[in-house]
Image 1: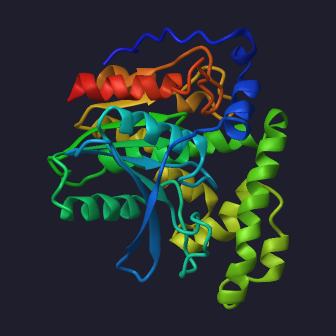
Image 2: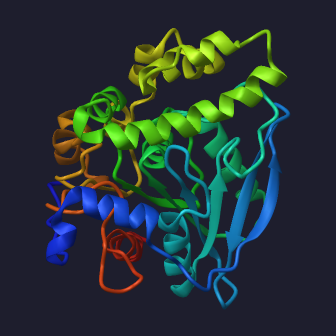
Length: 320
């Protein structure tokens, strides 16, 4: 599918990518959403917590919402999406990845950009409810990479899965990592690293044979974190191997259901390799919007309904 035009034109102040990113992450508030938590026990003995919110009327449609790096199901980009879809008659299952719901997960491993086995566990769990005839997935940042990798892998997708949306997607993880390590993103990278490293101290207590205090103190950058923890905990050779195996861009040519990617041109987290123009042109199932503005998950709009949420709803309505 050729590049999909975008008419997103925010107020002047939010044409600045950093301002839209920071405002949306730190100051946006979503009111009136009620979530009910369900614990999903996984086959390997671990768990994920799912936060459900429902349409006012009985629905046969559900959207699975996936957060980004060190996010959770209470982040405004998740609750905003849940509320938006609920008002359109769609239930929402907001996923907290392993270790992201406020409680340390049980295993040494946790979550990462390519852990599609965990997404599949959620999909299969929802199918067992025998309630929904239509399932959609919307992933943000890391969650977007995960969602697109999931539908592009060699697996038989359930007929109920109708469409996927990815917002601010690091389609090439190493390209995104290099951007995050640049000076313009210093404060973001510092914040991410602080949260990631803080979780490792509990891992030391639970798994002293697998990670040490010296390992944690050696982490100076996000790449160090992936070399020292992510790759070891999840079976990759090193950080580069992790990025190469888990980047969703290589899976886009095999996607067989309608899939929308929304990546802003002024997203400071995304390098050139994160914009899959060629893949979108060659695969009729991949739709690619590249607004001039929006920063990273910062598609501010005058109402509570962000541009990315409005676009996701329209995409589902048009495609299904």
